[in-house]
Amino acid sequence: MKVTVGLTFSVLVLVGSAPASAHHAFAAEFDAKNCSDVTGILTKVNYENPHAYLYVDVKNASGQVEEATFQLSSTSNLRRGGATSPVLNASVGKEVLVRGCGSKNGEKHRYAASFIKLADGTVQRVGQDVEGIFGTKVWR
Image 1 (cartoon, rainbow, N blue to C red):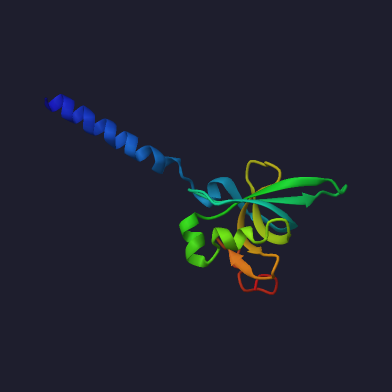
Image 2: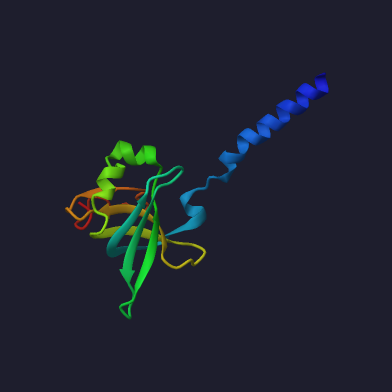
């Protein structure tokens, strides 16, 4: 009986801790020294856990459209800051400016977003301000 209870408890602890170990810090995946502003047309918002995502069509140097993906904070953090799904989705199909830091693994057009300037000119904080630039000229 003690063996069964001990084994059951061990399995439950392992299963319960699996989702927590899958989450990662910003620095594990993104490069805070490789941040830039990206302008393009917001095509889609995925408001899901554990992170929300923005998809933006940007033009490359030769004028071709490529999709950029921006990982945002958790939906609970976004809601607390006012970046709700309706607020973000109101700019779908319109030009936006997103501040993002590129991925460390070199994956092209994959970023962690800090801020977005929506089509109506409002700025929403959507991730960590790893550069400490919120409130500067562009990001007001």
